[in-house]
Image (cartoon, rainbow, N blue to C red; front, top):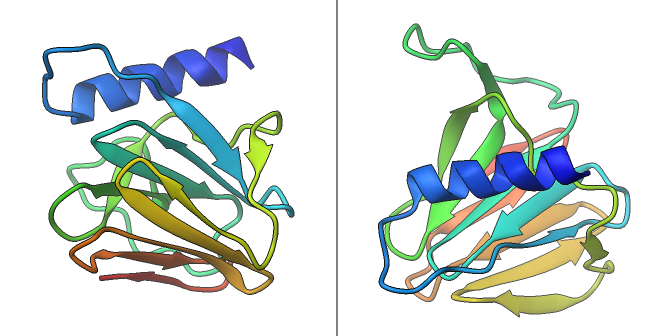
Length: 134
């Protein structure tokens, strides 16, 4: 699990804009364990294991594509080309039916999947069967 945490930290450090203070990365997961997320004050990354219908990998991506998603404080959610994962079996569980704020992000866990949004209304709805970015 130390390796997972280190990889998440590295990814967030690379993708996040530099800030004056150090950010603290935290993780959570859905009760099924099929969706895992890592976040700090600037971004939220969620990964889905075993995505049913992943899109074709872009030629520019030499790593895994289709199951990792990122949401920044501003702008639309997007898929990531990533060689690591935010799936952490030791992360705190966001139980079904609950909504929680993770920094600037609001996430709701349901038996049908996970929905996370920003104050501007951008976000994603994720499950193994479908992934919707907005």
